[in-house]
Length: 254
View 1 (cartoon, rainbow, N blue to C red):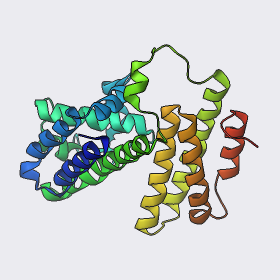
View 2: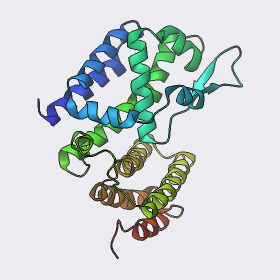
View 3: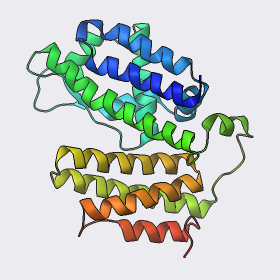
View 4: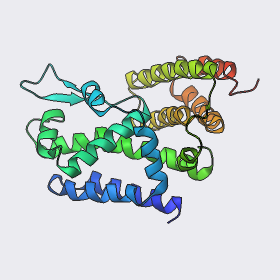
């Protein structure tokens, strides 16, 4: 299959999981994982995301207690960083498939919705699978379009070859903080769902470009972000701050 066909199959399997009934979710998860296993590019994406990823540490950070619910019930906090999001969701799906995580208990513990498994499952797919789907879609679309480095090709290179110098790494950390602030501001502004979804996707794509260390992809993501953020957050955004940081890092030219 071509990369486009691999992406289309992945998106189809995601939609089947999202639209499925709770009682057949396990089958849909298996099919989704198979679509990943049959794609060298998708496997490379997840291999890259899982590098240095500590699942137990991530579980403690993103599956937290809920002070409003009694007993052992908690809630899921979505990772802001796309790399951690992909690694975490992929790991959870693998553990559900293997039986390490029992889906019913998992939904009841972290996606509890008034005792309804139907509502709990909807919360699970909305907060974990939908962001997972769109983050992978953004990455794969960038790879197909040539704006994001192919992770398979990158993994074939010498792993110790530095892609960014120390200054660039420090500036990127500041860019991530600024992007998170813009994302929080968008959510606080209570935008219409369609605009909020588009804005979050643009920012998450920017995060993914920073994670890829691909300078062309970062420039492309910044351009998309610049014109989007001016529309969504006209008077309160970090566009100029981010531009200055990218100029300092040598990513943008004056």
